[in-house]
Image 1 (cartoon, rainbow over the protein chains, first blue to last red):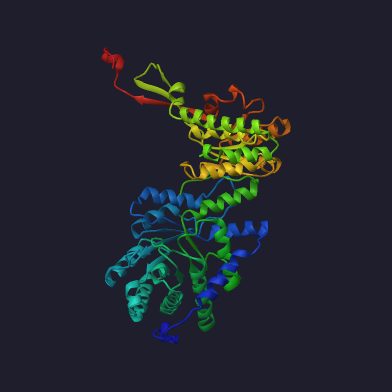
Image 2 (image 1 turned 90 degrees about the horizontal axis):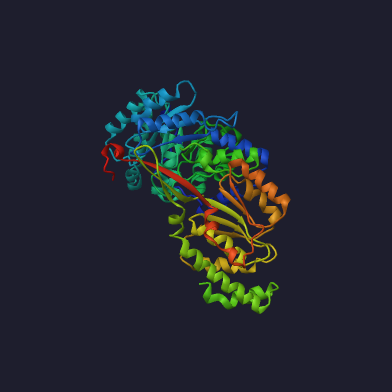
Length: 303
Length: 215
């Protein structure tokens, strides 16, 4: 399938207008959103969350608790959607799959020596296959940032293509770790490489590096997706991750998504938030809208 | 800190309809009141704690612990003394507070915020707002993250509303409508205790009854 596409020459530099991108991104934060729309937006954002736990201290118990939370976000608010997926390490995939049962919530697993990606390719392939065999519906891989920054674009391209092959039916999210790529030019180039190499999603960050997802970086990636769609007719999904912990910011991202890619992308098939604490803030805002009373985190489940 | 800016506070109180003598007296009282409550910080626990005799092998003791976040509507008349007299016992007991300053006389409260800012009080412990009482009271009373509400006026309709809304998350409601802040009765460790909760600990110990000789 890749062979039929005309793959651009990645050695040609791409330029992103830094000032323009930042200015445009800041405009999205200034839209006025009415109450009813806000509630619908919050519900949608909730439904787009990849509830994440990626800690060295993760245990089966913690993952089970998170899976329970994914299915019972706040039972005193009837009719809430569930989150889109649970995002865990490969060793926890089996536990998560079992705990989620037939709830329809997907299991995403990070793989390829997450978060650094500093491992030989055969290890990365085994890591990916392990996750998929244990039942992961989605795989979040990291690119080799070191190789990318050295200019070894073919290495990065081949790596993504190989992992995509190892994924089988699982959807592949490619983490660019934009905080380590530094410039928008590099983010744009990495996005293009990932999409042409077969990514289903492009994702900003691991959440382990600061800065993680920012609105301008996400905008650069959304524009890359738009241009890729115009060229090839293939839709690619987007996942900003890390640093999005407030409901208001999530709404800003949705505004941006709608204005750059349009309504076709406004479902959790095509857009995700990688976050752990965002869900509770959205729930608090929803309860505020419902009861008229400002909420306290004490009355929501721990995540 | 307060002492160093005494002249400014006196000046501001005079701009808010006090005579010079009244203003000086009020500022002096404020300074004394802070000293009074700072003295209580590490002593009131001893007064109100107890070791309780129990029949089982437990060391049983009760100690006061801070309630948490206290939302206070400061007195409208005693713009500075009232503010200080409300804030001091709340923070002496280890709580944090959100205080609505007198809406007609907010000048001293704003200057007082500057004083707190340059003192060694940790950030976020005292949060002073200015604004209209009627507008803000409902939010003070029904915010789920607030653990106690203080109201210092005798407006019974607002008192009733505060009590009703506070029931939502079982806030403590403290009404100071009859306190004369300038009197000696305007300060007491019982004001600290208004924002404390008594927590009791059952600490297992070896079987004292069996050992006879005791501990």
